[in-house]
Length: 143
Image (cartoon, rainbow, N blue to C red; front, side, top):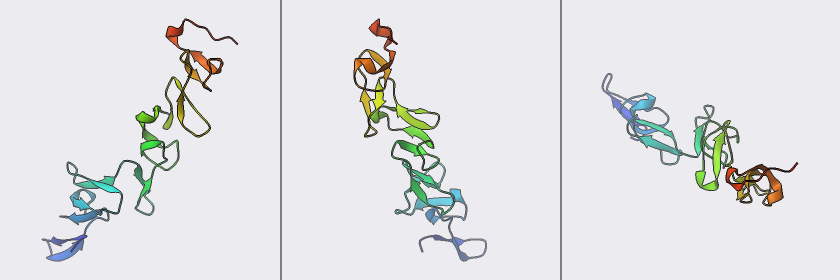
């Protein structure tokens, strides 16, 4: 029966830890497989079902809940709970938030878009939107 195991101490069917589909004990690290609809993945080296990338354990409803869309892994649902970021989106982790990498700025759609080639950091696409200049551009910022 799924979610239970035969307890050899008392020969009774005993419920698995709530994260396990199949198990050989009642503890978190006694899992043999995970419930497929739980957004958990099986870690065979730890014998436990952890929240899959893009999800975190809410510790309240015992569910894996989706991270903020900027986070690959997170500790909560807010944009400042990120543990890692989608690097293909030109984002890097800074104080638990995924911010645009140097050479990119966040546009009104929330996408990281390339700065002008003369800018290291910027707040828009044009060369006069530079916040700092690229070190190899031999330019200085006019204030």
